[in-house]
Length: 460
Image 1 (cartoon, helix red, strand yellow):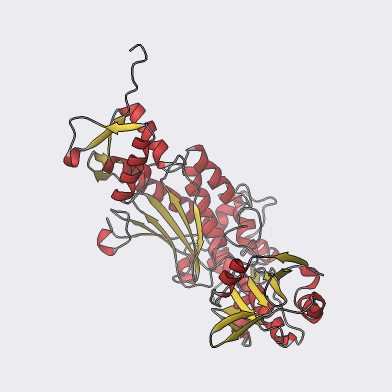
Image 2 (tube, one colour; image 1 turned 60 degrees about the vertical axis):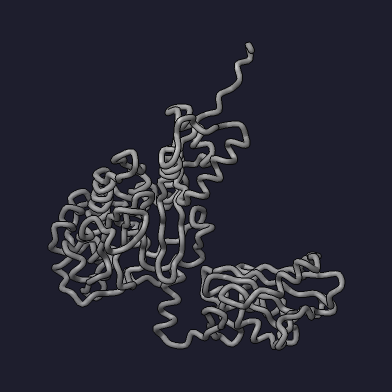
């Protein structure tokens, strides 16, 4: 039986005040086990969530009405085992509050590797606050792709086989292959030709123009903005579109991004300034976005270059059990054919398979920059590389003053990445109270500046 955890009355009140949604569901203890199975299946097949059994809903809100004894929840425990055997994707605990009736069963359902079904074989997926059945073949195919059980890269395309067997890309690739073989023989042995037709992965890897085979699904667009905001009127020039087979596309995208960043000088009160990002981090993140994007989604990869950050947005949500929290530790390839064959190219872009993002994080640390931010959007994944120091804003100000003598509010905001003038002013005020800095005499208005506090002469 599960562990019992005692929480306070205040914590129980905070829990009951929450609203049901995509990650949270309350159920009455009298609910039929089949409905509990639906909820657990739905959470596991989506993004995971918390299910509380023993919470009653009325017109006035939710109230605590738990099981009289944990043994009374045995049927629920059996239901959990049917949906996720051996607790693979779930764990649970009983919550007890002194002064409230009974024990509430809290089930933590995690995003699963497999598709989880109810006892009657039905499949559900959590959408907002609803447990929606997955009934159509298209919906099931989409779910299998999201789980990484099926991949769009293995579907055949209605194109001539010559597109991939008589291309410059396949000839250059096979020149370094061991043993040397004919293109069609090689592709067939690698299951990149099925029933005489190329699969998606074959076109992406070896067609000279895969964008003609998969329109609007396999390009990269690079944008440069003249500020920290994304808006059309802040575009410095028309977006750059990068196409071609994936091996070439990755290196072209990295080179173009580095060129734009190197050429981008931003004007502030001190004149033109430039920012630098570790080449290794950009290479690994762009490679990762090409390798693991969902090619069934009609969209390109977008690389947006701002004054203080670079955003790399890749179509498709994270596959299977991968989340933004475990992405550096867990492994699941959405496109194994692409990963495997790109690694066979001379100077492969994915040298250390499975370690790309970890390498990017490490290279940012070496330059004392903050780690990238990984976010999962409605139908994409975005990695933001920030030009922001690991040191606290206060520490950066002090280090700057040791080297330069004075600093203004505007300079400090550019240095630290703090966007608000009033917030930066509070940091200055805290440093003054701490005895670290002081107002620089003779400065006022827009030129108001700070300097390190002059220590009293101990000889006096």
